[in-house]
Image 1: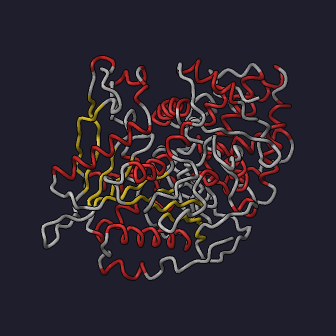
Image 2: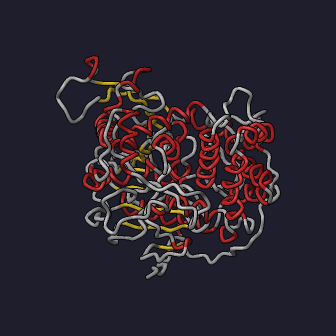
Image 3: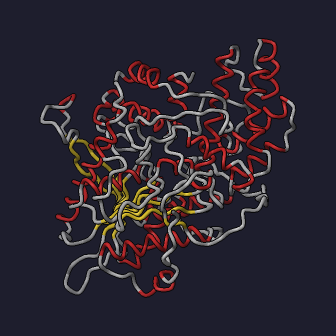
Length: 549
């Protein structure tokens, strides 16, 4: 049985699970637009040699350059949009951070301004998204667009109650955050005299959920939305119901030869958990294993519960690595603290398969696999399974735990048969009790479907949902197009919202085409074609790709 604290560890960083409809996992997919290139799913291994220091330096240089091209702004946001009662400490407003990058913002001959590309910040410091959302940056010039990157309340520096914000988490909801964004957009348009400027919301993961819901709830503020890796269907109360184990199935798929990983990797990972349980069964075994794994001296490893904590820590790393299974080195999943190699799931599988098949070899292999994430800086001298990647990531995970315990209550399970983990069945009662103990709140398991409609979103318009073959979130994504104005893209060989990232010379043909499709829809929404420099790219747009039945 999955204990509630273990469950919060697993889901703390937005590890969602949803309906198993990904065609890559052997299930029928009704009618997404499948990016059309037929590609070779070979067993080719990626080169394990890469230069994390050079890659990190390149990303820091780019980040510094982008920040200099933006103006920092603060606004007085309403603490509670939906009540007239006085908030704690009489704090009716707080300062919300956002960045405006308007070097390419066009003024037309009639005096009207160009469109606005708006990033709906998710559960982290907004500068992470400013520095990574290349789809916005690379198309600002062609569309003459202003860029706005808005920070989500309670994250980064937008703290309603300052350093004591965690003591008053009741205003940390998606509804409050979207109301912040709607007010920000409308205020900005009034202040700049651009009431007729079209606004396109962008977002990935939880931010993609917010972008899509913004288009549905605030159509007066948002004209269209690019919602990538947005698992808006990862909730209870759907019909048909979703598979809470689909996340784990997708992580497992990424460790198979079908996804380019070394043959036998997923089975070796599955065997490693039993090996860890056997080698950690007694005090003598744990003492030997502590030395074998080079655990940090101050880390307790005296009980079977400690062994379970280690296993969950290792498992969580695989979840993150699968999300960051990009074709090039990237620091996105590590929140800028270290760099994952190209196709890190393949690299991890190489390490796994090269570590031996006895118990100690399997355990060493899974630790090496996990350290691609936890030791991405290559600076750790011992193994500390009681800490995450960095304090910022840990803080965000804690706050997300509150959101998960309230309205983002997304079931997650693992079975050990159709995935490479060990049995961890979903227990709603235990999860609810854990949330009550941890945060003093009781989740509403079906509230998200009540509030945002679940699968019944056919009345919405102007949304492009994108999901990747390698992305564990895809099971909770919109994989059907309910009407011609809501487009569902399925991108082979893509991980967690890869389509939103900056263009890279290692990008696949499929993600390039997906971006072209997204740009073509943006052009429709705002009623203007991009400039001539974009013309060649638009020739590769979604040529009426046949839908799968």
